[in-house]
Length: 87
Image (cartoon, rainbow, N blue to C red):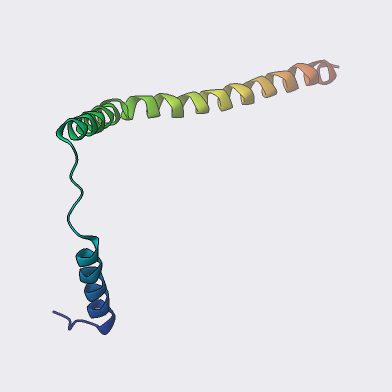
């Protein structure tokens, strides 16, 4: 194991000093704590359950728009060039 560097000692000392100065941890009312925990649980479950498929559909939709725009441009170009090339 590497010996501890001087900066690490200083940082650890500063962190301990800040912890002591901050005092006791913040205490929330039980009703407030339940509301916050419920909101976090709702947001976390929504992200984990619905994160893959909407992202996949959004990515495919962007690509489909790009491909369709390219196809329209190619069709317009060929329709303009066909009369010239047929002569």
